[in-house]
Image 1 (cartoon, one colour):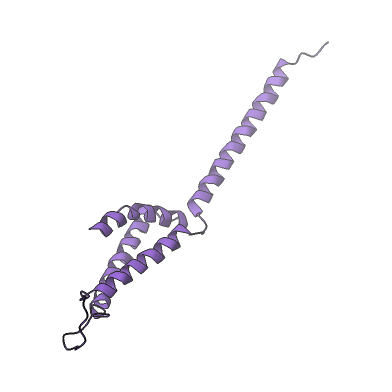
Image 2 (cartoon, rainbow, N blue to C red; image 1 turned 90 degrees about the vertical axis):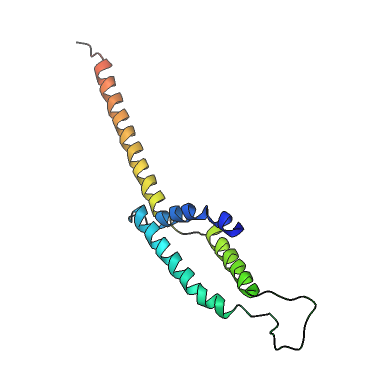
Amino acid sequence: LVVAVMAGPLQPISTELGVEVVYPLSENTVLVIQQLFSNLLSAAFIPVFKALRNVGTATEASEIKSMFEVPQYTFSFYMLIVIHAVSTCYFATFNGSYLRYDAETEKKAKKVEEKQKLLSDLQQQHAAYGSVEPN
């Protein structure tokens, strides 16, 4: 439950990051692709974690009993922690090119340039109308 509360807000953030990186694609396409791959990865991890459920635990047939019994899926739990930490570090230090941001910045620069050109044209027209030539 704690992992769900902590990971829940990451989906909109990862969607925005995905949209920034693959700009010409729509937000819906990016969200569908991310959802598809997250479902595929969760389905793939089920047999992996099932196979690793007893790693590091004492078996019933083992004669060596420790004072503390390690529950099943302990290794899988630690593996999930490592996967989350690695992915967090990767996305926190992501240094890709943000195509949507670049396109919006370029669009804004063109608008500012057009505005400056219109203002200079207006100033030239105003100066031409305001000057009086002697006869």
